[in-house]
Image 1 (cartoon, one colour):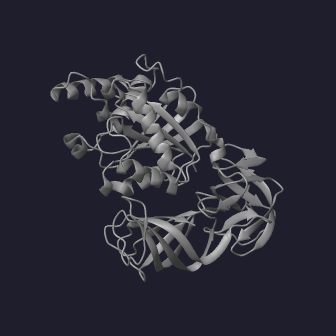
Image 2 (cartoon, rainbow, N blue to C red):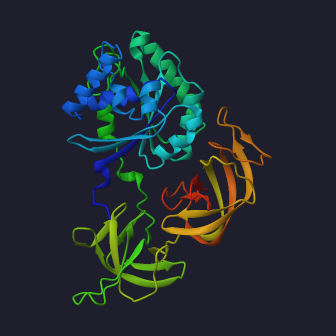
Image 3 (cartoon, rainbow, N blue to C red):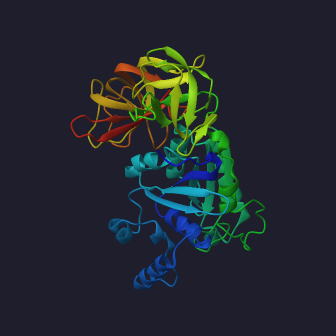
Length: 420
């Protein structure tokens, strides 16, 4: 089990934008100006930049770790970086901008609290901007921060920034995004990244780092619906704890307290919470997303894949699932195809019953009467599982509302799904 942390102490964010919009440079600048890189890393950056004939330090090399990326000057894979300030810890996923790597953005954004969407000030809102914003909306990322980059190349014009903000707001009004922020920046020169820009006195908002440190994420978790998927059963069999039976896992959502009346699903057996243990001690109250061990008052049959919920607040239970999916597999799929579905700590066999419609990722309309899904396609489908799935809608609960599909022959993850 992972160490416990308070959810507001950690911000997971993902970067998205078209090719060459400056995502890797922005993350490099953020790490550099916040003094989150080591001296030997900085020296290596300086040497590499000199070999490339540059008169400045190429900060994008901090995140472009793959050999092909360094040679082409682009991002191919999802690059994860970890850094911290006195106020908060951060996990950043630098995702590729090419359309053929849409699946990589879905991977990087799936657990994010915030999406940083970069826009080139010279180009404004383009198709890639719309595509990445649609994915952020589909994945229900709670916060979107639109960074208008390369402001130095448009003479730090307020009019250019305002026009882009208005165009983005007009498009985003069609999406399900609740919280917007807009910041004019120059990642290359560091304007409004960590330090306020002297070139844009007309901008009165916070810097990028200030926004990342101050955005409220404690309410991003569903604290209403207690959902505890059981990952394993703990039976020490020692002389001191001979009769101990604990159920370990991560609290997906909600709050559990000692004494709460609970139901174990799918069996429907009831009991009360006798004790709750986090990795350090026995506690009275647990909050998502803590990793826990729960002890019940009654010796009932509970195993991996079961879910503990409050007695009068249960998830949906069913074999038929209606979902949006992003197809990640290299091989296409169609109605009738069979896979393994992995949902929370449970696995089952599943069959694609129907392809309802596909989303044209370029222009966003629905394409009906489609019979095949290919790599990076986003579609609405219907699934039938062999055993019941314990789920909530993804809109209500990002943990119990999500799943992946696994190809049985290769064990490859071929789809990421969001239950409607």
